[in-house]
Image 1 (cartoon, helix red, strand yellow):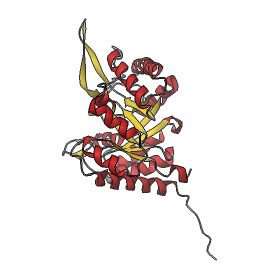
Image 2: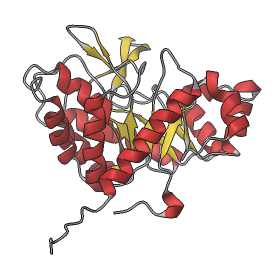
Image 3: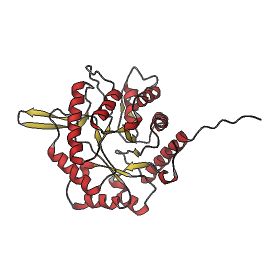
Image 4: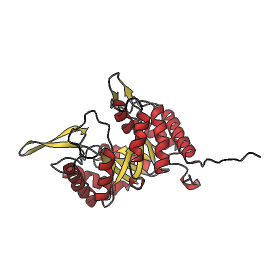
Length: 296
């Protein structure tokens, strides 16, 4: 697979408030802008106008954090209504959310949202819950939704599938697609004592287990090393091990749209554009055929 001239830009950025004006004024070469859906649910107002202005210059990808698709109590219908309204208005190139749960019953009459991306057990019961909720969302959106693997700091002991097996089955059951976050896979590998000696190899093995036909987007970001834990904080440049794994991912999946995420300690736009340039170079190098020359 090669990067054709009409598809030379496959890398976009997370569109954050400090860069709104500069991106619109300078129009840097980006494949798309990705925003957190929930930040634009309120009808009208300045936020909606910012997104419409951006939509005039770039494709928009809507990336949500609140659907809680693995919640046994189901989908928050008001949240889904807002997402459907936003998607109909903006006409995004992709809509995504996470492989997580967050909603649970507080009382018999009240459901609370944990305000976090909580990891599910990879069981048949979880697969059924996710499948039912994703079917509901896709029916309302009238499009496939992308599901992102998450970084997690606990592991359920009753899982009967590996995470890649679970994701592949979810796509087969629902027709959804995957948003493969390479950084999240690396963070989990770094935090796993069993793979700590070879986190890049563990991440590449995870990527190899994903069916390429399911993958529609990838994420790259920075992580923070605290000593005991590696935290997915989206607050720094992409680390070298993640770049190595991303090169492998490109060989697995091809020139898939890729987003540079940066959500804390947001730097100048030029820093993000440097990361975009690095990602673009990785894609080109990974997809350049290796030629063998015979010596005379």
